[in-house]
Image (tube, rainbow, N blue to C red; front, side, top):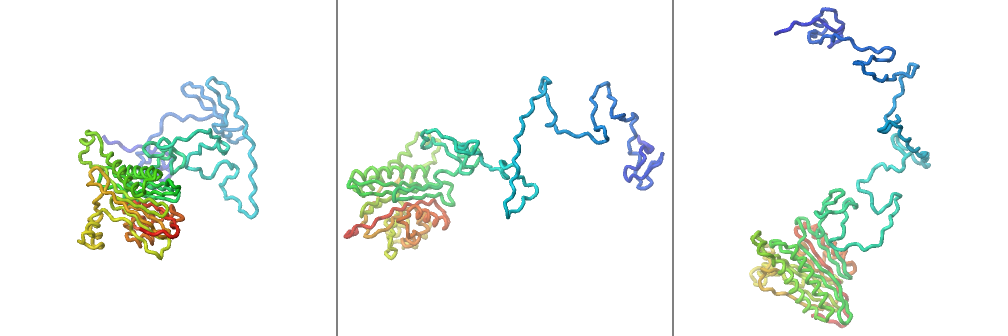
Length: 462
């Protein structure tokens, strides 16, 4: 049912505010349809008389003060400025008086006044608040809190602190409980220095984990002469748990050498026995319940390669299984460097058989396929050992293919080794790892450096 337009109920047009006359149905100025204007309500609005408003429905509302009696608006109060009462209606105790604020320090001579909006009256409030949690070792006054003398837990039980915020505890999943930052795994980058020996291992730029491991140490022979030991292991990526294999092998070989040398075992025999001990440690990783093999039938035995060196007074002994290497770099760079190991690899076999030259063999995609390793599924184990008597001082480089892939020849390796490597082995190991990372870092990188002291006069070589 259609409706007729209603008379104008307002004195002005709602659209253009042009004055209207009674009975107008459209605005004469803009043509606005006045029939859509709602009619006035029939009840009259409530008017204030003498500042009081009649209370509707008989409710006794309090009268709001809107004037101070002199025609000025009443002052407004913040909620915190109005005294409150407790749940029983009693006044609340007054707040303690605030300490007097120290006057702002005058700017030093020659300095500019602070810009507007910069507050200097609250020196205890920094402009920017640190993101990290407060150091629990400091008291409220900022002084170190007394720490009771008690031993710190060692090993896995020791509490780890976040590398990002330096305050939060790291949970069992490897995340900071304070800032949530994921922590780097312990083996992503490892460094160790033991006497004159140093080693560095890095995950590289392409692998998701570090499958290399090393062991370095020093001991004393029965005659009191010092002996340095370095073992480097490279996990076989195509095997199951290669990182566990390299770690077990390096630990077993290192412990075997450091235990045998003080007893008077010849270093070359001690190296041979250490390789056998490492092989047993890796083989033990394959001893798992039959139920585990049923649940993962595609898994194979853990495996790794091993290379090591022992430096004593006038004698250098090396041992290896696989394709990791040992290089000799003399302190006098005018003398030629040398590679002291032969790879257990497809390329080395092709060269030894005369089927390819070295350049052709190592250019083949099968070049790095190893023919010797430590593991339960390895062929007959043949530990390689050799002894040398260098006639001059130098440094021994023990490394995985993650390094020598970027410095394959002995001369290339010598060029990459810093001139002060014998005096700064840890720094030089870092430099060599950086050389591999700068070259691409396609593999895990591990290198150990053993300085070889100058032999006594009259010593020969073998």
